[in-house]
Image 1 (cartoon, rainbow, N blue to C red):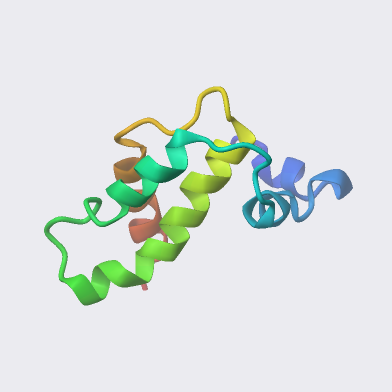
Image 2 (image 1 turned 90 degrees about the horizontal axis):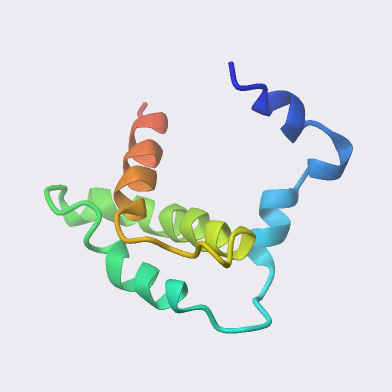
Length: 92
């Protein structure tokens, strides 16, 4: 409905997320430290083994957002939004 599929499939946008995810930042951003602190706080009511499968994707999405939007950075609470999206969009 948002038209994002069309934008994602444009030639210059292909692999943009992967490029940002794998790109090292030239300067430190305090958001990365806060993301690491909040990762394990994201799913407080879930068993540890279920939570573990979301830690890496959660880190990737949040860190990539900070790289894409360094002036906004990471805001506490983003982990809950992204975590729940990852969890419910990947339900089997």
